[in-house]
Amino acid sequence: MTARITTLPSGLRVITDAIPHMHTTSLGLWVGIGSRHETEAEHGLSHFLEHMAFKGTRRRSARRIAEEIEGAGGDINAATSTEQTAYYARVLPGDAPLALDILSDILTDSAFDPVEIEREKEVVLQELGAVEDVPDDLVFELFTEHAYPGQPIGRPILGTPAGVKRFDRDAVKGFLERRYRADQTVIAAAGAVDHDTVVAEVERRFAALQNLTGPATPAASYRGGDIRLKRRLEQAHIVIGFEGLSFHDPRRYAAHVFSHALGGGMSSRLFQEVREERGLAYTINSFDWTYADTGLFGFYAATGASNVAELVPVALDCMAETTATLTAEEVERAKAQLKVSLLVAMESSSSRAEQIARQHMAYGRLIGADEILREVDAVTVESARAAGAAMIRSAPTVSAIGPVGKVPGPDAVAARLGSAAGPASSRLRSGSADPTGGSRH
Image (cartoon, rainbow, N blue to C red; front, side, top):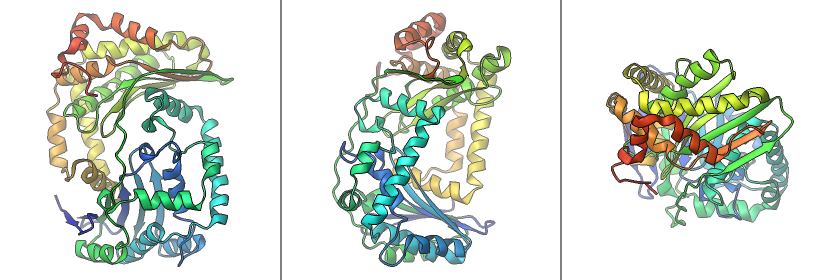
C-alpha cells in the first residue's frame, strides 16, 4: 500500500495515496458526523450545514467559491450520510493548495449570512419535495424510519419541512462548533499528490479545527415495522428487509457475498427468477448496508398492481431457499464481481480518497486491497448461507408505496420465510449462524 498517514496534535488525520500514473488530485474532508448524531431539535442540521458551507465566508462569496475552483478546472461538492459528512474536490496537482484553502475557508470561517440561510431553506424545502415525488427514493426513506422507529439513525437525512423552517444562524453555527471535532475528521487525498505538501497545507489552514468533547452517539436498536402508503401510481414500490450486519462484524464479507448472489446482478437468483423466468418486474435487486453498530439487508422491487400478489411470495421464497441451496458456483461468481468492483473503484482517485478516509474513520487503520481480496476469497458456501440465514431471522420491515393492497405485512413475511426455508435453512435460522446464540444488539 502506498498510503501515508500523519496525525496532527489536534487529532486531525491526514492521509494520502500517491498514484503515479494519475494526472489529477482528489482530496476532501470527511467528518464522522451525520444525521444519526443529531438531537431531535437538530434533525436535518447536518445536511443543512453542508448546504450552507458553500454560501460564503468572510473572504469569499458563494459565487467566488464556485468561480475560483472552476476557474482552475476543478470541481467541488459535498454529501451528507447517516454517519458522515464529506466535502471534496478534484483539481490539477498544482491547485491542491487552492482546494484545501477553499475547504478550510468554508469549514472554519463561513459567514452564515441570515439572508443566505433563508434563501437556502427554500432550496432544501424543494429538495424535500423532490423526494416525495420520487417513490423509489421515498420507499427507502420510510423503510429506514420504520426499521429504527423513534431513533436518530432512522430519521430522514434531509430533515423535515417544519424543522428546516426553524433553522437560524445560531443553530447552524452552533452545530458546527459543537459537532465538528478534529479527532473525528480525516483529510484524504489521492492521485497526483505529495504527502508532505498536503500535511503542511493542512497544518496551516485547519488550525481552527479543535479536539472537543462531543455527545455520545445513540446506539441503534433495530425493531422492524410496517408502512404501506396507498398512492395512485402505475407501480408498487416495495422494500422488504431485515437487520443486517455492522461493518465491524466478521461475517460482513459473507453477508456481502450472500446479498450479491441473491440480487446483485443479472445472474442473481432474484433477477433470474422474478424478471427473467416470470417477467414480474423490470427492477428487482438486493441491498446490504453496514453501519457502525447495525446494518440493513433486503430487497427492492417495483411492479404493477396485478403482479404484487405473485412477486412478493416468489422473492421471499427465493431469499429463504438461497440460505439452504446457495451453490459454490454462485458464491464464486459473486466473489468475482465484488473483487472487480473493488479494483475498479481503486482506479479512480476520488473513489480511492473516499475509501481511505472511510476506512480510517471506521477501523482506525487502512485496509489494503490484498487484505480485502483475502477476506472475500475466504467466504465459503457455508459462511455465506449462514450470514443470510442470520439476517432473515430478524423481524421484517415492510415499506411500500403505490397500489399496495396485496403487499403482505411483517407477520405474513416472517411466516412465508419460515414455510419456504426447508429443513436445512430452518436449522441455520435456529442459531447456528451466530455462535453467540442471538442478536448482536
